[in-house]
Image (cartoon, rainbow, N blue to C red; front, side):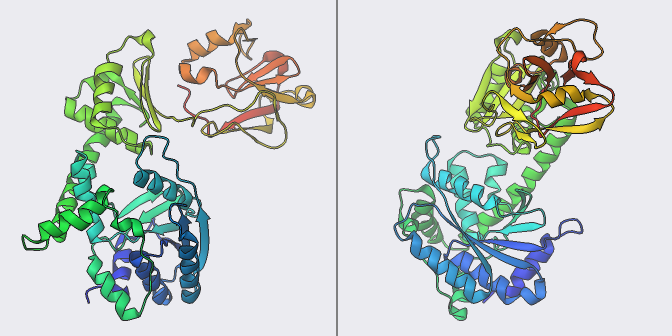
Length: 445
């Protein structure tokens, strides 16, 4: 048997660095063979690795025996002395994604809630999964990053996602489980050949294996080599990104056009990935380069795909979260001693007393409410001689058009006293005063 807990510990040690040492392992526990072996091996070696352990089981609501899986996982965790959490989720396929992709996205979204700053989420993907992923991405026409398959260590939530079994064949896990007397549950959907991954697993890989040799191992080796090429392309994109933009979500169009087309595409893919957003397809990349980049400035074009919008303004491309990620709350929300959440993707407002310049105490005592632009609003900002239209101020400031209707306007009664954290009305200001803080705000420029 080539796999035992020492193999697992060695791989985890390899992944640690001086600045990235987890204090807890969060195990994505499905109850299947792979995650059962992972949980058992970690529990068996807790006196060696010294990490706290938490097992999280996510129920997608897609299988009739899901309650039995939860019970199995709970009993397994109890027998191993591992803390256990159960999450029930609803899979939304309305975005046009397939069931497998939607379920995977929902599962990881649930797992994010249990991964803190010093945590590593451990997933039990193994060598066979890597081979399947390579073939699956080849079928989809993926580039080097997709062909590289499943990453071993990636940022995730506030911590990291690690896959320490990625070089272990499934057969070795089966042998370990049999020797340790482990029991696991089998997902009936694993036999459903309607799903591309299951078709590859049960029909294509066995057929390739009939030609002789270690097909799974060779495919995984190809994924590893593609991964090295992807790293080099990322390094190239990082350099290009520094040359054409001061942020990964804002790219200078003239600088982008100075690059060759392959480098333009490489840069855009990398920038979207850096923003933590779903990657573009080849069709979407073409639309950005052929429709968005050369568009007239006053056209305000958009290229969008689920979760992402790419817009242009004043010679720059902006990569934005979409699908309602930027919203605004109802009119008339009160801003007081507690911070006020402005909705998903919009951050929160708060007040900070004893600032060198801010709202006067008299204004604060009148109470503050948050409203949004309807048109025609005016303000005389501190330091300016005249009352100005908000619309004109936003244009001069270079605030991107899609954020202008989402800017929170603070009122004391009927008096406009502040525009977000950009301007304070001179008549409402004092030195010292109470500052308006807007933390986690989206990019305005």
